[in-house]
Length: 538
Image 1 (spheres, rainbow, N blue to C red):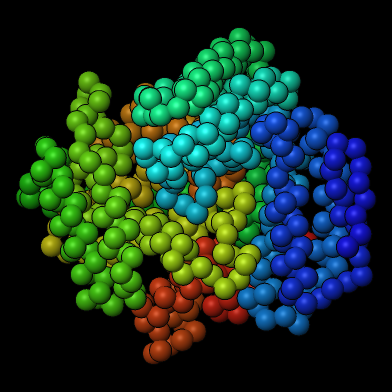
Image 2 (image 1 turned 180 degrees about the vertical axis):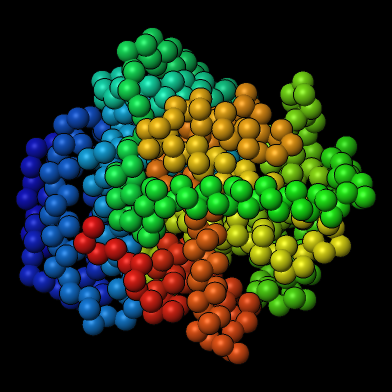
């Protein structure tokens, strides 16, 4: 296949004779994934202005090759794979045109991630060369320690490069990046304590990375006064990103309307539940490790029994195990007001409610143990394209299982479902308004805190600040929990109408899961044949 080599070592794929079979798409996908990653120099990803300019110049060649593939006669599932590849390429195109995280967002240069995410990949934009310390076995082997010494040892050079790369002027992105870098410094210190005595080279690399991270945070602080612009991408850009990258058929304005509707609905439903339950005792928090462990293990058992008895979905051995592995351990409150963090305030009052959201772990277990036959769906999509499907299903299952009867014998737990929905809608509005350049992050956090019931999301808490910063770095993610839920509800209704008496919840849930963790609009196309939500020329 022909290619042209240009400056900085970047390969520009050139158009070749059209190939219209599915194998050509798979081959192009593999080339695309290699192309999307920057070059590495001495273990450091190259995000310099020259390297990014070269990558941007080369990108149209890949689009040309993709668009030359004629897919009209392909089976729907293969046509969908073509659209997934196109969406990823659109994601990189948007990054070069609009988001430019390597130039605008100092937090983009965080490399260390000590805990696994509950979605197929990392939440938000992540730098190539990231270090998932949770994937290693401890105590570290000599080989693993040597590998980590090299990878962590690259952090100082990366942060030095970042100082030249970062030219953006968005105030809130710079301001919140100080938190992110301070967080990496703490994570590195904790990691250093964990591996103390393992390897002198690793210990030295960790110490140097801590110093470099702290100095980088100080540099961000010094630069912050000169960063005075809004950080959001703007309404039109946001809409383009939804339709062409995340394959969501809504505009910024439509998402705002839907989020407001869900916020008011959640509050109204909560007040009705509270009135119905007014003579019942309030739920109280688990007080110790014994209560916590017993309640959450019992919750997993009862929830799995409910799913099987009510014929909600096909039960796999991995499901029970996936939920139990995520029970965690009891911890006392860390704040003077007694709050632990929003999701702990929910989870410490009823063990089963957050197990429903654990549908995430069902997804990940299936991806790991039953890889999809499509090589394009087998790996996590880039640019968080999966968010509406992944977060939307996990969020949607909370309310679905309530309606299906999971909490009929625990009416106070039903209140928690509505509080969860209110929180997702309120924080989503904050993210939308930031990207619409209507609000600062301070206004977004204040709004979310005000509209989350019972004071469980304090405006000075880490949860809401982390969330609103995250949604600012990744357009579309903040609304994906509720928008994805709405799309799935629509699909369920359409599929039931289409199948008539042949429809069952179990059939729907199993068909839905089998399609893979891809945008709901694509799942809808494959299950129903409806392609009216497929963006082609926007």
